[in-house]
Length: 185
Image 1 (spheres, helix red, strand yellow):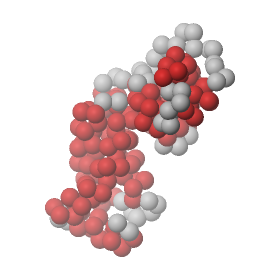
Image 2: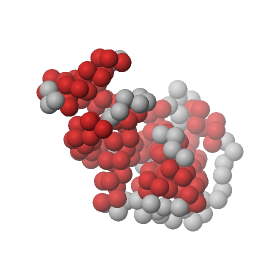
Image 3: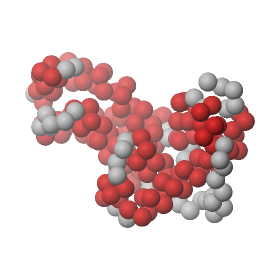
Image 4: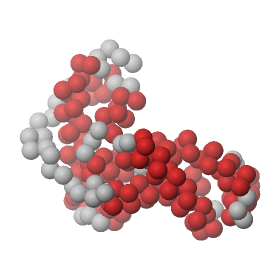
C-alpha cells in the first residue's frame, strides 16, 4: 500500500468497508504479530493482543493525520496494547532477579555473532517481563529512556537500570548456553 492507495484504504476502513479492513489486517498482521510476541513472550497471548490492537487501530483510524509512516503509527498502537496487557497483569513490576549480575563476559560479542536472529529473539522473549519490555522499547523500537519512562510510569533511571540488567541477563544466558550456538549461522 503506497501513498494515495494507503490513504484510500484508510478512508474506506473508516467508512466500515469490510474488504478494506481485511486488506489492512492482511497487510499489518504479519508485521505486528512479531511486535506483540516480543512484548509478551507468548504466542497465544500475542494473538489476543494482535486482535485487541486491531480493534483499537480501527477505532482510532480517524485520528491518523497522514503525518509520518502509517505503519509506525500503527506499531505504536500495538505496542501500547501490549503494554496495557502487561500493566493489567502487573508484569511490569521491575524485578531484581540479578543479584550477581555484575560479571560481564568479553566473549559475548563473539557468541552473539554465532547466534541466528531467531535464537537471539528466543532469548529476548525469555527475559523477565520488566526487563523484556524496556529492552524491546529501547533496543528494538528505538524509544528514548525519557519516552520509556513516560509510557511505563517509571523514572528514566529505572529505565536505564532495567536495560542494563536486561543486557546482563542476556549476557549471562548467552554465556551459559554459548557453546550451543558455536558454529551455527
